[in-house]
Image (spheres, rainbow, N blue to C red):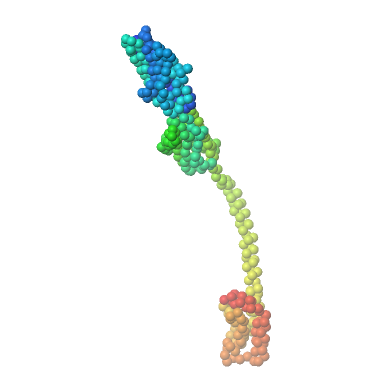
Length: 362
């Protein structure tokens, strides 16, 4: 608790010391002291004023010598007060103000000396230690720290200070806000922000400590600290051989899938391919050729007498030599063989196989 001290010297009556506490906690007792030296003179009176209004008077000739005057926020403890000391009990926010001591000598000089001091009544924060808002449990290098420290309501507003890893934060990293005043008593809320970009040196042993301290004179000090971790990104493999092994393993897993797909495709197309080969073989044995868009089957055609198997609208026709050659007509026996081959092929294929054969040929 700080106290104003005043020493006032004059010829004869003089003030030796005036003690008025700078800060008093709400609900506590405040002691005002006015020490003087009469230097041979008689004391006439000692008077106390608050903001210019008298609230206590001590006159040795009166009975009782001490008396009080009602004043809001001032409650004098008469049993523990005298000419040199005045005790105020159960002080409240209205008790704050300027207090003045006035000492006067007896006649005939009635010399008077006076001095004053200011007293502040403190209402401590009502919500415990300051709160840190907006922080994250982890930060990476390059991230922005944007956090606020908020103290509980008090009178007057407390002073807030940020520390990063035990060191006061640089002024350019601080964000100051207006004090918030609320309630009938005008309690004040302090807010102080901290903003900076995270760098490597902010992490010590993988952690960064952010601390907010709320203080009021020498009798109030509370703090709150958060310890945040630095994100540890996954490390890339150190040895190139490990990366290579991983790539090979990935390819090995993919190969069976690709092989399986290829086998399925071949199995799906195998009946069509075998069917076409059977048709081509039948046509060849009959002395004709398969009529399709495939060049290999075109080259197998021969000019002259020979049927061709034509795929047209999901049907298979054997093109007879007389259709291709016009005037060159085969004998009846050969024609009968052609008809037999055509009918056999038609009967052996279902409608679905004909459509599939048509699509494949196209």
